[in-house]
Structure formats: structure tokens, C-alpha cells
Length: 184
Image (cartoon, rainbow, N blue to C red; front, side, top):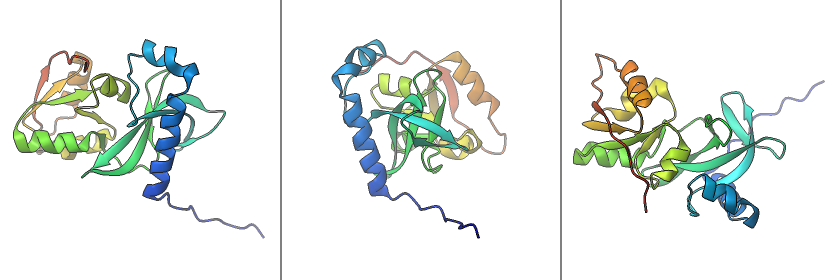
């Protein structure tokens, strides 16, 4: 008889531990040149790991692809992790919970009326100082950005992609294109 194992849910402390390990890996001396070439500054808020695709999610795996690991934080709490491939900038979440990286910045933009910087991927988000947002789940974009008055897209392609997701029933913010400068 074959034993069926139920999936064990990953607890927030496990996410914190995974992010901490990824952050430690990114601090390794062998990665300094790579990180400089990518335009990244060391920070404990992100890391590096090898990951593999598991359905729509990812998991750490020693023989996987090289990826940046960034936190998805909502209401000040770590709710998910996002792995962004260094090779092609594709990204996946660890748990499938996050709609966006930078959800707290979305809330700030919604409440303050300022334009929300929107980036194509977590690498560009990190280069922008970790401010603004990256849409992870495009099926939820209308809900994620509802109430935001304006979005400053990193590129024209991103602005066109966002415009294509505009739903007349749900009002998206005005969409602008302006270059977002790297944080100093």
C-alpha cells in the first residue's frame, strides 16, 4: 500500500529562516563581483539561492537555477518569498500567497495619493531601492492596485502590459512612464 503524505504548510518562521540563509549566501565573497555587476547593494532584506520550479511555486534546490530571493511583506509581516531568476528574470513565489512585492508601498500610495513606482521584476525593484512594487499575480492586478491614483511604470512595455489588464469595471490608476532612478 502506498503512503500518501499531506503537504506540510510552511510557517512564517521557516520563511524568515530561508530568507536569512539566502541573505547569508548573498554576502559570500564569491558573489561580490556578480552583485556589483547587477547593480545591487548588500542588504539583509534580500538574498540569493538556487531554486527549482514546483508547479506554479519554487523551492530551494541545490541543483536549481540561481535566483534572487526577496520578501513579500504585507502589513509589515513576511507573508511569502519571491525567487527571481538571474538568467531570465522570471519569478515565482514560495507559497503562492503574494500578489505583489511591495504591498505596503501600494497601501502608502493608495492612502497618500502619490504615484507608485512599478517595476518589471524583483531585480529592478531592488535596484530602485526596494521602494514601489512588482506585480506577481497579474490575475489580481486590479485588486492589488485598486484605489492607487497613479503608477510610474519602469518601462513602456510594463505600461502597455498594465494597460492591457485594465478592466472597465475596476478603475486602475493613471499610468505614466518615467524612468525610476536607482537609490543612492
